[in-house]
Length: 476
Image 1 (cartoon, rainbow, N blue to C red):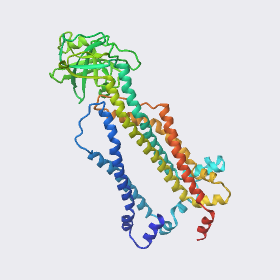
Image 2 (cartoon, rainbow, N blue to C red):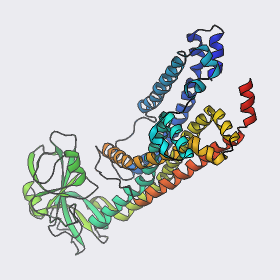
Image 3 (cartoon, helix red, strand yellow):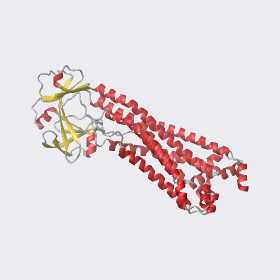
């Protein structure tokens, strides 16, 4: 809108007057965009919250809307869009009136950069590289946009399946029981006759000194068939008198084998210092495991005491003795049911990533083509086809696209690991979202398809450029 701004400015209006008028554009863009984004974000968050509540014990939400997050979500775009709009208009006032009215693109970009390295290529490629170098800022924006879209879409492709797979793997590989019973007292329970397919267990909950975390330590049979623990290499860990902790807890505490942790019994207040023998590669639970007899001896219980039962078969236990019970299949079915809504949400997330990529590529391409109408008209008069002209003017976008996608792959891994580490900091869960070949290829295919669609839409603008109009403009 350089001509409009130049005309208003040349009529005697001050810079302040011009700013008042044209800063309304970023205001409207921010207002409508941020409101729509907040509404969409709240809708998107609901299935995620439902999915995590189906497995994790989370604090009860007291407010319907997270006003603090909504405020930040609206403030950050406002800072960026108002600052960039203000700086753009202020920089425009550095031009002369003639430059404003006739267009800065013809004055500033009258000649392509002279880079000897590009001269070794054939004509079309050479012009393409020089156009790309001349608009290197836009190419960087394009690459960053593709990186962001890749991260967003890669998370959408990976998150749900990785979480469900990790939970299913834990319950299939590590937890072999089908029924879990928590009794209402700790004793030898002579009134319960355990079958061969059942095992007793004991447990206590402790606060970990110097942290806000807690640990639940289980006492299980040394040769347990219900709980199987493995190290990072897949080797089974034998349960003994020494403490074995899960990977989530070890990563949160920043400790490993041989380190000691100080514990405080939540019920009695008695303190203990235990040495970590092994870290089990188990993705769920801030838990510890010990051999049952050693557990009872260490924490003051009688030999043979237990508070719960793992079983592969349903047990006939009087309801008056049971505090809580559930089946493994019920838990997994609940998680999978919640994942149905989550998959729809992630589909919307992937759609947003695709639309974002389409808009970025299309807007930047259109801007470049509009600035180079004169060059396009001249190239047409010289006999170049629309395909070759498109390659010369916007061919560098392909390089930016591939650079953005390749850079987005490792950044997706780093971002997802950081995100999962943050959101699981205070809950009994830890997971590393691994990028599969399928998710990488799916993301590439979708983004490439979106990119080619934007290419097609932008290419239509070249077809509309008529050399006759360019000549008339020159005469005028």
